[in-house]
Structure formats: structure tokens, C-alpha cells
Length: 308
Image (tube, rainbow, N blue to C red):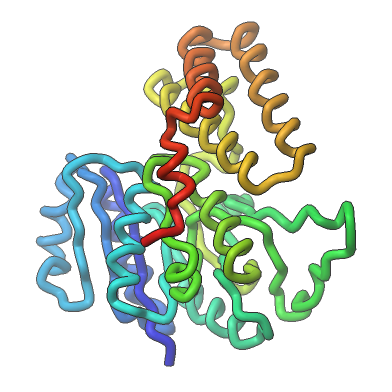
């Protein structure tokens, strides 16, 4: 039987975290360890975990960070801890993810159906209203050759090119070879970069339609700085644009690099003619552009990101 460690990253969502943990513990295939990385929560997360008895439960490893390192830093730390325990697979998710009781088991059933040595398997994600969310990207190489998407389609399994950190079962051998998520990404785009990296450098990845989880994030819409109305979230879009530029230049073709840069320019124009907080939004976009162009994001560290 494979040994599987679950990793949950949390920040100021203690009630959702407890619901997520409960769902993980009720899986039809039991995990060996649950690694909870608390990104310096200020809402009493650790106290609640203690009251639930998790701090003294041998199945749990609770890591409280003393600064908020974002999702990227949290998954970097959680996967580092889990990898040191030498499991066969790590199963990762945010604190607002509720996996169905057989979510993990279906991923493992799919693994046994696939001939290749896979880098990761992804669940099918919907929000509380049943709308599709966190949909993995399919391989774009169909422009140059046929991609056998339906190789395992009868089993509800389809090849993907990248995915998000929402119920991913990652092969520990891929972590050993390809390293950890790059912590300086902080938020947004870290999952796209990492999943593309392990697909490129280790092996193919698949989405499993029968493995289901609910993502309780408020909206199923894609992120948009143009539509953003929460002033406090605007600075975070710096990471979205910077990280997308880094990722596109590392993995995508010249066409998609051009489209990425065009999207940045289009959004910069759009925020000037639509909505509120025009100059704060424009500042986030331009700072991202110059950070990428001049390499101030830590270009050397990024090139060494596969080293554990």
C-alpha cells in the first residue's frame, strides 16, 4: 500500500481548515500524516487546532510560520517536511478545499490504470454552487501534432499540461528530481510553474474525473485586476503579472510569450479607462513588468529552484 502524506496550507480561515482536515481524515483511503502549515494566522488557528487535539495527535505535523509566506512559501515548507518523511505521494490542497470521501482513493485507482510513471494526478474541482473551478490546462501541442487526450478517457482520465494546488497527488520521486515550489512567487502562478516543471522534467500528469473536491473560494471567475473592487487585494496583482511573465518565458512558445505581454499591455490600458483605483492598479502592473525585465525578482534563485 502506498504511503501518502497530506499537506494543507492555511491562513486566517480556521473554520474552513477544520472542515478540510475532517474531510481528509474521513477518506476511504487513509493518509499516513497530515502536515498543516499555518502562514502566521492571527485568528486563533493554532488555538483551535490545539482544542481539537491535533497538536498532540501523532498523525499531525503542525508548522506555524512566523511570517506570511503566501501559498508558495506554505507549500514549499509543507512539501519539504513531507518529502523528508519519504512518502510515496504527497496530497496537497488549500484550507478551503473539501475533498469527497473517495477523492484520494479515486486518484490512486487512476494511478494504477496509467501505464506511465506520472508526476501528479489532479482532482476535478467545483465550487459550492457546482461550477467548474481550477480547471487544469490541456496540452497545447495539438497545433503541431495530435495529442492522445482519450488514451484513458474511458476511465475518466485525461492528460493535462498544468494545474493548480487544489487536491493534487504528487509523486515524491518527482519532488526528489525537480525540487519544491519556488517560495518567492508568494501567491498566484506558483502552482502553474511547479506543475509545468515536474511534467517537463519528470513525467506526464493527468486529471481524474472521478476524484472530486469542492473549492469553497467565493468566486469561480478568473482573477481580473480590471474587475477588482477590493482595494486591499490590488497589490497582490503584482505577483500575478510578475509570476505569469516568469512562467511564460520559461515554458511557453514565442506565440504565448507575445500573448502574455499583450495581455499585460491590454490590462494596463483597461484599468485606465474602467473602474476605480486606476493608478494603484497601473502601479501593480508596471512594477511587475520592470521586476521581470530587470530580474529583480531573484533570477539566480529561480534558476536554482530545482535544488532541495
